[in-house]
Amino acid sequence: MKTLIVDDEHLMLELLSHQLNTIGDFEITTSTRAQDAIRMVETGGIPVELILCDLQMPEMDGVEFIRHLLRVNYAGALILVSGEDARILQTAETVARASNLDVRGSLQKPVSISALSEVLLRDGKRSSVCAKGKARKIYSAEEVRSAIAEGELINHYQPKVELMTGAFSGVETLVRWDHPQDGLVFPDQFIGIAEEYGLIDSLTTAVVSSALRQLRQWMADGLTLHVAINVSMDNLTKLNFPELISNQALVANVPLSSIVLEVTESKLMKNPRAALDILARLRLRHVGLSIDDFGTGHSSLAQLRDIPFSELKVDRSFVHGARGDPMLSAITESSLKMAKQLKLQTVGEGVEDQDDWDFLVASGCDLAQGYFIAKPMAAEALSEWAVDWKSRT
Ligand code: C2E
Ligand code: CA
Ligand code: CA
Image (cartoon, protein in one colour):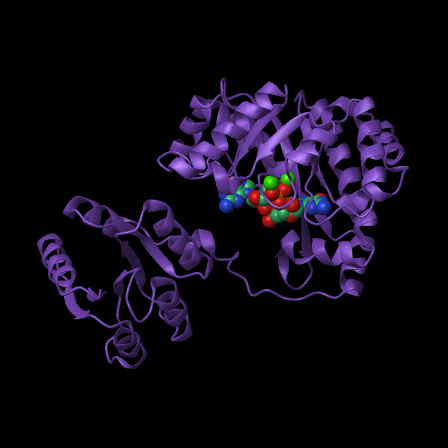
């Protein structure tokens, strides 16, 4: 593996080279100057596959170094090394990951051989950072409007299960656009446009109507489930929103108490009084209210104080990887503890592996949702998944 080590201290260069040579077959180049290292990447004949980089260098700090790596389109892996405390190292790692570099991890000085080999064995985190693989297309308001009108929006459903028993307790509805040319388009590519151009009410109506009809079908099949639906803050401006939900439930013949509305405040509330009025009246009708993405943006303590939520969803950025990460575990555990004191049901989202699952069980969380359990799927796939899941648990 063609490897470049960058550190202003000669001793560190020697030490790391020695350690790498003990572990495996590395073709090592070293540099005490970050500028030289960047030049090597930029002009080097053979592409560098791995860089170990010190965060504190006199002429260029690690974060700046990362910026230059991006500029020269560095495509290899990166390991950060620092004598600073873990928190600073982690921040630099976050910067690098956010810019989509293939960060294998970070190491605190003095670096041990075992820590170094552990990081080297790690897979690149690229896949989970990257977008869904397809090129992002910008859609016009007219295209989104016609998609809603033509019934091109379809719901996918992601299971939520009880952590204590494994029981399948509900689903979250996630809208997709079944685009005639582009295939399945994900909500981050059209929800924002719908909000901006006044189309979110008709979008939500379409999503709610088909989710509640689907719930009716599942109930007929003998499944007792809660169905969660995402609502935008922009849905909470018209005072008749509770009536709209009630009418839809009546038409579909499903109880209001089996509906959960997930609310994220991605931007400032335009009309907090109206939103509060609407949410309070929904709760009076026993519709569940969930504070989504808790801990991010404006999904905050003030909302928790003012709005009669019945459920709290800890954002996936705090759940995945919480085990073994003191920062994430502190945030997740205290959010869950607070939710318990407020008598809210708790959901951990972004459960991607057994460690995430075990962590939530140990933290006393009620429900789990994430790829470890199931990815969002078409309604027809759900009963087969449920049988499968039962045998897994
Ligand atoms: P969200 O409410 O936070 O939904 C969860 C998102 O996380 C979904 O992305 C889901 O596919 C993804 N996810 C689930 N499990 C995992 C996991 O284990 N790991 C990772 N990395 N991701 C996981 P999706 O479907 O792309 O939805 C994105 C967002 O779009 C949703 O975020 C929600 O805010 C919004 N959205 C979806 N449907 C609707 C809708 O009908 N109305 C409105 N207003 N917003 C919607
Ligand atoms: Ca949600
Ligand atoms: Ca969420």
